[in-house]
Length: 260
Image (cartoon, rainbow, N blue to C red; front, side, top):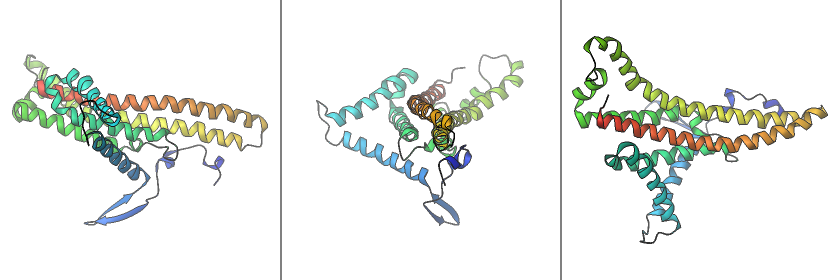
C-alpha cells in the first residue's frame, strides 16, 4: 500500500496486529507493538535507576546525578510543595509515575516507534485507577473509612439543608470524576497529538505522490509543519506527565488533610 493510500488517517492507525498471543485460564492475551513499547519503558526506567544507585558517591557521577536530579525534582517540586513534609514518603511513587508517563508519551515523536502507548485509553485508565486506589486508601488509613467518606459526602461546616444538593456533587467529583478526568486528559492529548502528526506527515506524502505539480509544492509545507508540531508535541507530552503527577499529589494531599 502506498503512503498516499493511507491518507487520511483514522482509528485504524491506533490498532496493531498482535506480535504474539496466548491464553491464561481461558483469557486471551495479545502482545502488540504498544505492549512492547511499554515493557521497554519499564525496563529503561529500571535500568536507569539501578545504574544511578549502583555505586553511590559523595560527589555523584553523571548517572547518579541524573537519578538524584529526577527524584529531587519530584520530591521537592511536587511532593513537598503540594503535600508538605508528609508527602516525602510518596516521592518514590510520584517519581516513578512521572517518568513512566514521560517515557511512554515521548514515543510519539521517536522515529520507528511514532506512537505513544498512552494514546490508547487502556494505559491511562490503569494509571488513573492506581492513583485513585492509592489516594482513597491513604485517606481511609489516615481517618478511618467512616470518617473519610463522611467528610467527602457530608462536608463539615455545611448547613444540613444543603446536603441533598452537595452530597451528589461531592460523590461524583471525588469518587467518579477524578479518575475519569485523569485518564481522559492524558489519553485525549496523546491521541490528538498522534492524529495531528499523522495528518501532516501522511498528508505531505499524499501531496508529494500527487500528479499535480502545485500539490507537490505544498507537500514541503506539510512536512515542515509536521516537524514543528513534533517539537510542540514533545512539550505537550512533558506537560501532560507533569499535570497527571501533580494532580495525583493534590489528591493525596486532600486525602491526608480532608479539608473542605
